[in-house]
Length: 174
Image (cartoon, rainbow, N blue to C red; front, side, top):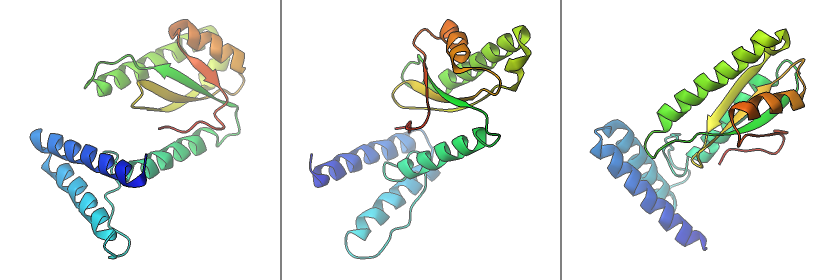
């Protein structure tokens, strides 16, 4: 795919997002995304670096924003030097119900951790942080001081059959 075609497809998708936001009455967000899109188009005409909205809903700004959030999560969870694993957990949501699916997943993660902590004191220090992706999975960082990765895999896979747990070194949200 050429850069021009990819840019046109991205622009068309952004126009649909802006229209959807206007249809739901979120005029502030819609205008912010439209301004970012216009500034980006003006850049091609030699006006210098454009103003950016830095919004997760923007087709052009979201990648940098999401990567910055991910690096912040990693820095927070790795600050005490404990081993960290990446768990890829299925969200299992219907279209348009992402927020509810994330709330259910947060509750389920907390319940799994608390249940394991009642069985073993070592689980009381487990910390979790993550992000949901558009692919229907959540990338969850698990800081597990005093608990081996094999035990983390065992506990998480009892609740989520499709859970994949591994090294977070090369993982980046899409």
